[in-house]
Length: 274
Image (cartoon, rainbow, N blue to C red; front, side, top):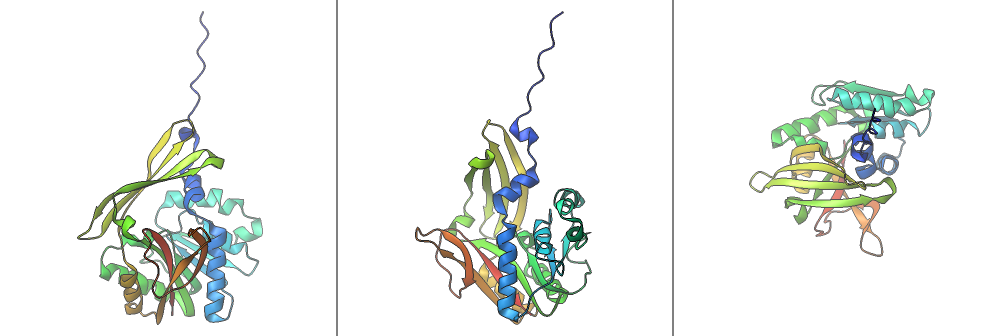
């Protein structure tokens, strides 16, 4: 009898975990938490202990937050039960037992969830761009305003520049991990600022994960966001712009800036004070 042929070796794409790939590609929670804490301290003169992460996904930022010490607590809110379960198993579950108890993950809509008032609330990775009218986004910002303490601070991020309005693909190689991250701006409608984006991954063995993630957003501008935050009740909304290194590339350090730079593509933070 002929021996059975060896089973096909699985491709890198088949073995990959899209949440791990996403975090390797777009997140640096250590830097994020440091920025959140140092900025909060500079604005309020005190330390933030209770943190809420809206659209938390895998809750990596919440897990990083509680690693600051025994006094720190985090609440993660997301509407997707599958990604929360992944985060419980692969992020919260890997914390030390004493840290684990200080992370609370809530499956809920950020527009209806009720949590204790927090020192600091963040909505990162542009997730709030799902609110595509002024009324719905203002309503979310009002929810954020109500969710923080009297001297609380709300952080969100944004992106822009002429290249943000192009239908294009941008590839970033992660040689250490054997894959490329592809940011695909598939559709942009200038009349409404509707944008559809995909994230694809390609591996060194040639295999691919197409449309690992898809987003349909309104591409909000900095003036619109600042105005809506003030309309929602915040007394101040400041843009924190990234500095440059000697080669003209971003240096990862964000400081207040009232003008910004006419870059082709940029990412910035807005910091709103109650």
